[in-house]
Length: 133
Image 1 (tube, rainbow, N blue to C red):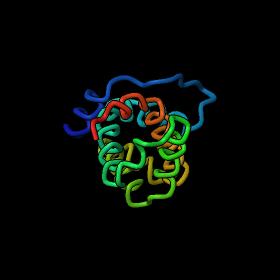
Image 2 (cartoon, rainbow, N blue to C red; image 1 turned 180 degrees about the vertical axis):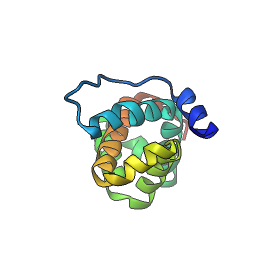
Image 3 (tube, one colour; image 1 turned 180 degrees about the horizontal axis):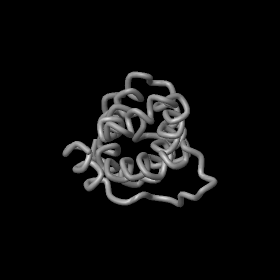
Image 4 (tube, rainbow, N blue to C red; image 1 turned 90 degrees about the vertical axis):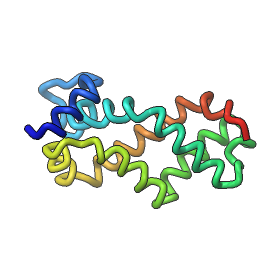
């Protein structure tokens, strides 16, 4: 294993979630790779989303809590450039072997990745509300 891969795995930490004999390869990848990366990058994702919202004329910060949840989801689903940027922040922390596994089924893994990121941002909405405009 390359030194970069070893450092990445040490940085990310342990698997998050349960992996069983019945777990699909996507579920294994999600728990071994995606969840630890999303957890590691959480504060960065929040900062990046806040920056995005500020650049979009601060509309996000004037919305009700329910509408903020919808805004997060719609932004990541519809703004392809922003979504690709977020995806790159995740993929950059893959090991070489994980990347090879990812490209075999990137479409389904991208859906999982973005859904998990959307939920993570929604769960951090209180952090985003305390931003000074």
